[in-house]
Image 1 (cartoon, one colour):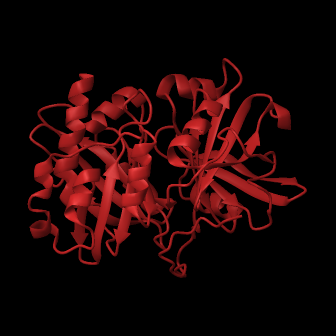
Image 2 (tube, helix red, strand yellow):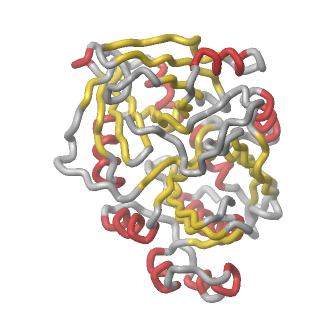
Length: 377
């Protein structure tokens, strides 16, 4: 089993009461898991590695586990008309239900967070099969989203007990160079950002890494505010967004209108070669936001010398930003479903530890153009 640790390895601080080893998996509740699994295999190059459903004795749902690099997506659909999964999909559309965190001790993780005020999603439980055991526990975060703590030190199977190894759906899957989850971004309602910043600080021991206000993230028409939370060793980062006052409706308001609650807005996925990754994703039909050609006219003056040819970035519509540590390249997909909610970011870090502040205006103007087409600006 591959580990989920990000490349920036640091020792756990002695005072870290919730040491996290990385993102274990992200689970989506979806309307049709088989078709969603096919999409992520064919378009994004994920490999189907495990399955649970009626054939494995699970009567109320079916789940497909996809993996690429150190990323695991679990796609789950209900087999019943009146289950929590069915209700979740009816209210939110396809969306992230679980951001699972890899830990050494799932029971202690649950105890430490619940005693600090977390609302329990489920108490610690251990499940077993011939490949060993996995201990799980869970707490709620914003909206209906759950953090599941996963302790899998003693497990050697494809995913976890209850699942069987599985391949197929797409005859041959070719990865596109996706490596690991860089960060997951959540959208919360008006005035709720600081409440959830406090939650991650006090309940989970995270630190405030960066703050962006409505002057940093604004256009002529809309604005938002964001704070980036990071756990003690830096393996897990959760930016949290809330709307800010503007002349028209912001992308956060549009998300909340269609998701009908706070939730995960986008997942940023790292690659070591964003040009190759994005070119292949485009070839497979993945749609990306675009910025005007004028973005590239003074790019070198704005961000300094870079390794890549500007024309190659312009051709793929890649964005570039620099901080004190280096620079990064990034691009954002359009929403991956009909509701304008969940999307993905592809990011390549060349030293930079930031989140592309210099691209916010161009990115948000691009999003506003899409909002206008949908009649939601």
